Length: 134
Image 1: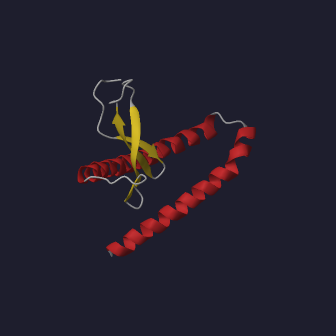
Image 2: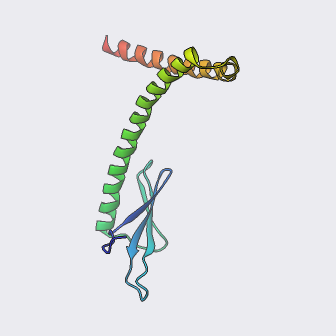
Image 3: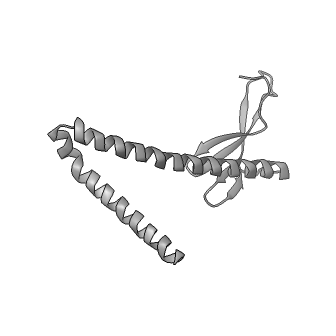
């Protein structure tokens, strides 16, 4: 661990993070994490922890982290979709070349339903886009 601690540490959770201020100014020089806030990215809420009062610089740093985190999650989500395309192609090749009858029996109905659902959503969304463009 470096000798210079960051000003804030964000412990990521599902919809945001717990925000801590690292501190090593104690007798044992042990790093302590003092929680200062809870952040919810989904609704933009920043709640001070306990009776703590957040400074303007605390709030600014937290908002900056929230903006960066939202952008990272958006990139990851789109990357997951691109990977899903690869998985669909790989699945088609597997089904055609290597899958046993038992394996196909186990996954065919679920795959067909998932693909039907996806196709329905994509067709509806494309139709909506085309009707707006006219």
